[in-house]
Image (cartoon, rainbow, N blue to C red; front, side, top):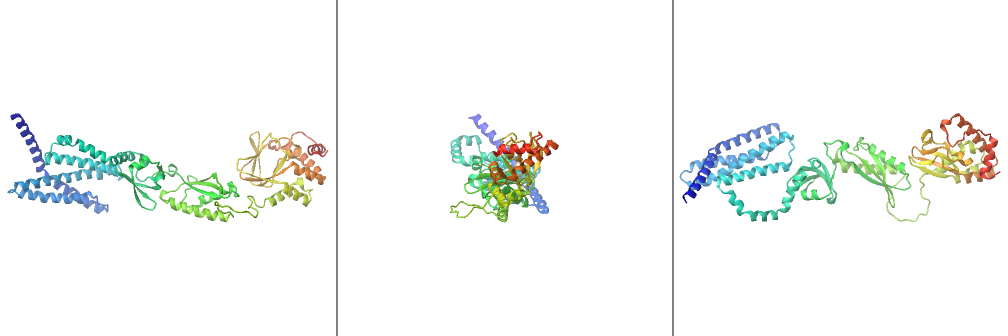
Amino acid sequence: MATTAAQQLNQGMLSLVDLNFFLVNKLVVLLVVILFFTTVTVVRRVQGKPLSPLAPTALKLSLLGLVLLYFEATLTGYPNYRQILARIQSVIVLICLAKLVIYILVDMILCLRRHGDVPMLLRDAIRLAVYLAAGIASLRLVFQVDLSAVITTTTVLTAAIAFAMQTTLSNAFYGFTVQIDPLMTRGSWISIPEKNLFGEIVNVGFRYITLRTLDNNQVLVPNTVVVQSVVTTHGSLKEAAQERAALTLSIGLPYELPPEQAKELLLQVLQQEALVLDEPAPAVRLQSMNDSSMVYLLKFWLADPAQRNQALSELQTKAWYAVHRAGWSFPFPHRQLVSGALKESFPNQRDEILAGIRQSHLFDVLTADEVARLVEAARMQPFSPGETAVRQGDAGSSLFFVLRGEMAVEVDGKEVARLGQGRMFGEMSLLTGEPRRATVRAHSEAILAELSKPAIADLMDSNDKLMERLGEALSRHTASNRQLQERQLDSVVDERSPVDYLKRLRDFFGKG
């Protein structure tokens, strides 16, 4: 009994010593807090910076603490009331001291080290830790509560509270996960397709992140939703444009509009839009071929992700005008009975073929009716860049006129010539049936007119001079190829006379 009483007396004396030490320094703590936050308030007002919400609250509590300290000193005849005031005043002192520590750690040290960008989650974590320490100190020093006993008796209660707050605790845990992710920092733009959200991260807290949408709304998204959803990051203004995600826009155009012309038309719209960056360069791709339209994907970058809606509006508006200026329209799903001719993909093609045939020396012996028959027999052949019209070594029995674009001629894989508008190739295979001597592929979007063997044979029945003219052309073609061997195009290197070629032509076309 004596030993137990002595232990309790020693414990009580230790608590009283701690409490007396703390009470003696209460006045010093209050004066330091008042002086510190008064100086901070004056300096920030002079600098024109916003005042921290901690300062006014700390000043008011410190002044209240001084008032309570005065009453504590004057109420000597009322020990019970004095003890109550002392405890209240001690708690106030601890709160003021906690606010001072928080301000020094967060608004001074961390702001200087992070250049003013202190995440809200880190602020809240420091505040929670400091206030928790102040609470433990108040229980131990002011109210003299044995914390071990409290923890032991409240284990079941703590488990029940934790179970009831599991969602809140999950959000807090996920908040740390989001906070350490470099792609989810403040200022980054993200989208959550499942929730139809797109905005800038302005805060990451314990329970939610705050997004500022393009409508300037503040949307609070729980951390569990962010972690468990598919999130697309679009970068931030701090990053270079090349490191940010590109924006895309899909536009459907009619099948009658050739793809290369459509891509060039839409690319001009992108290049002329002031909101679209020149670097990285915008691009247009054919995305899909749907039931009623060909869908093109416009890919581009913006200087500021906040301009997304404005850029999409401007691009779609200007695309509408550009497409209609070019004589086309936007298709939409519908059914109709077509009573007239559909719009041709390549208008005025017959006039272009007629002009090309009239410029050729091979067919200047034909009458107007015969030329018209040849034009009707010709076939239009459109090619996109890189496509091959004829391949070296393949069999062939037709020639081609270049009506539009440019064709590259390759012999054994090496380019030897370029053929522009009005030029012709493939006549040796047409007139003699020999294999193609070169590969000809489109260098740009090209439109060719193809003349086949049956069409030429039909004209030979009605015009005897055509056979002689073709023989003379083959002889001249061979002589030209002897002089320019490095530019061979469906040619032969053996030397023959026009009579030999005429005999060969009669045999090939069955006119011998």
